[in-house]
Amino acid sequence: MKLYGKTKELISEIDLFWDTISKSVLVFDQCINNYIDKKEERFEINLKEINRLENEADSLRKEIKYKLYTQMLIPEARGDVLGLLETSDNVIDSIKKVLLQFDIEKPEIPEFLEENFRDLTKFSFKAVDEMVMAARAFFREISIVNDHINKVKFYEHEADKVEVELKRKIFNSKSIDMLSKKVQLRYFAEKVVLISDEAESVADRLAVYVIKKTC
Image (cartoon, rainbow, N blue to C red):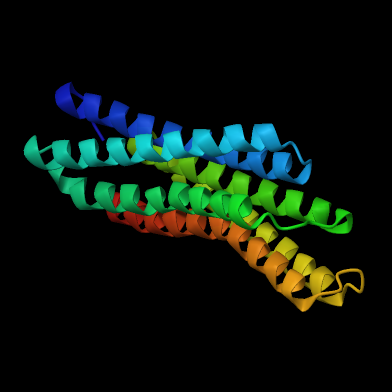
């Protein structure tokens, strides 16, 4: 895609949108680990930062959408760009929701499950990180988009494997004496892994767009 004039400015704004996604998943990783480590003050700081980033992403998305239509920029890919932004926005929305639920419900994570929750968070983080790199490449170096898409799928699959292992540990555990606690921990495992699922949804959309542009 040739970049010039207002189109170049628009791509720069889209880059800022990806920046907010990148920052949000970094905060997500920190936040879950701070929760597990019982660092309550840092966890609260992370929550405030996620709220700020989510608002910033929403504002950028609306501004980009406005410019796409009012200034008639990149008309050949306008729908694809909007679809990509909307789907990517689901990532930061899901991050905000899961961290808010941690703050509201405050699940007690037993020590023998901590590593699994950290791994689940790590793979979800990596899936989103690769998703962002794929999205950036779509506008600048489309030939490498599929490399990043493949990594998104790899990390999403790894997150799924950890999720299954984690659930087995939860429901086979005799040290967790209440079914309600097991159900709650399963719920949070599913919510953390949802972040990688959202990243894969964006990657799937990008894969279609790459085919459209290269065929």
